[in-house]
Image 1 (cartoon, helix red, strand yellow):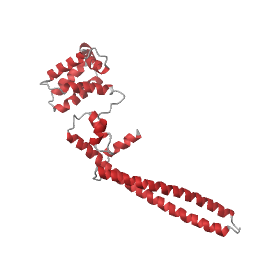
Image 2: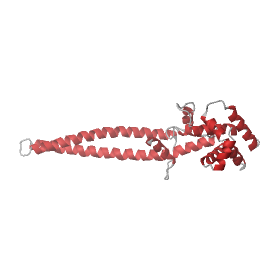
Image 3: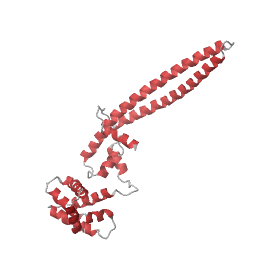
Image 4: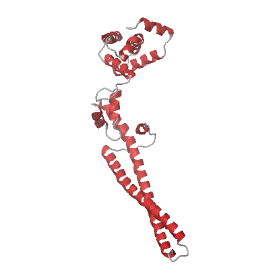
Length: 258
């Protein structure tokens, strides 16, 4: 879950971004990989130097006022110099790695929203939640085309949620050409009744709350909206009506069930 939230942060950055391309992003990630390899080597060297320095200090304590004191003191100074050099190298890698990662974040913050906008403007298929999810899934690691191509044939193991299933039913019928709200109501009613023998909870609920769906269709069509917005607005109105039902609403839904 944390990884998912981190992925979404690139769409809500409030500060500057850096114009980039997919090729530049690949180069930036390769550079981070190279520096991270150097960082690991520097870290291992630092840990070894730190351990050697600790052993040298302890040996120097034990060699006080002995014939070995001078030799061990010289070795101890050498260990301290090596530790200082390893610490500086580690710090250098830390700063370089942080700088590259910050730069990558700025590039990703430009790339992902730009790719999503390209997808929207491409008019590739219908703009529905599944298409959006397919286009966004690979961002910012790959472009929207590659992401959509890889994901479109993927079938999730679990079925869509019940709410989304109801929306798909509404979308399927409303997408058909119709001259009026009355024609859409008739088509929707016929479609729901045609599936009456199927044991499907999404269809069963829409038949049970037919009164609210019918009112939602009539209400939204009266506003003369763009065709592409109709299924979303109708379903939103249906959700609103079924979510706050008065005694009158309950009575009418009971009398108008299909």
